[in-house]
Length: 199
Image 1 (cartoon, helix red, strand yellow):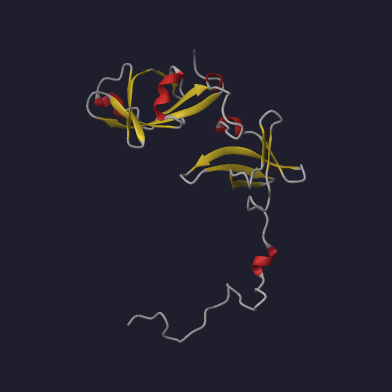
Image 2 (cartoon, helix red, strand yellow; image 1 turned 180 degrees about the vertical axis):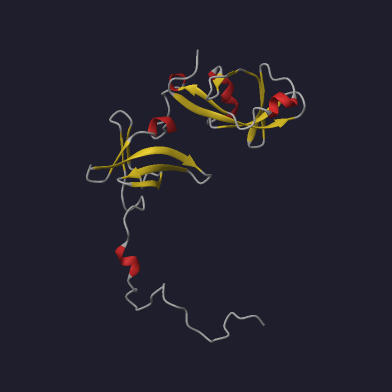
């Protein structure tokens, strides 16, 4: 197979491990060792990488690629992103599981069904998946990819439906007003002049 036509990122190569060409690799597969099950992996420039050995190591896997036999060659690969073609991935996941590549490009609809934007990327900074969405002229609006914020995903029909309030797209007008008891949480705190001062 040649360079993927519909690439899905599976991993990114990290630092060299030892002196024999092994590399630390961060995988984006559900099971890290499954990275070896997809056949050759491809860099953006079309270079193919064949895994000949893989083992777990803390939060990454240690991989030996065919043709990479010393530390210098391994160090030259640091930061290389690895892809497979979307056709190599199974479609038998759970109903609420989606490949990031399938979400990118979907239309974003609000709770009335009106199209309000488009998914341009999916990020995960450690706290769960986040949709990066363009809304009208605004760029880079981030929406948590949760059941509450994104109650409907239809890959077949090409859209996701968001709940604007749960997604944080609407201002809560009541949050600006003081509470019924007259307490305004945004007001200045009152107390003795030296309260909180150094002793």
